[in-house]
Length: 162
Image 1 (cartoon, rainbow, N blue to C red):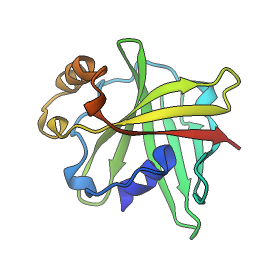
Image 2: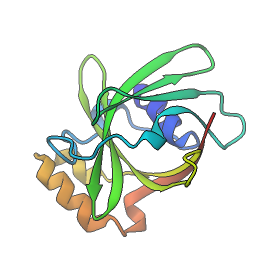
Image 3: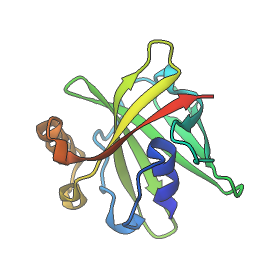
Image 4: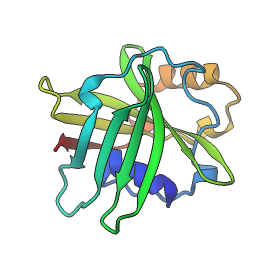
């Protein structure tokens, strides 16, 4: 359920069926972040889909890292650190998910940010091949080679800034 909060944050409508230890890559796209925080992503967000009650706060930890805090209706709060990578001119959020026994990264491609910064559309990169890759360089190459493959993504969602 830990990863479900981040999925709900970025893709509220997407079901997550695999628990943390078996559905995340061991490595991010980049060993060291190189894309600065996009201030348009900072703020409070909610999915456009009706019936979703989670409120999400994205804040900048520093010039390269985000803190994503998810507050669910039942007052449960989860937090995740994240950073952006640039792959073939596409911005991808590396979200670090962890619990007491494991950690890893899931990837969310930013498809569009409105010019006023009040709406963002994202896609979940979901490819189990990345579970076994042993370096950030291999993750980057795999994402680079599959960015245009629709089968590489599980779904998209749109969020609005509150």
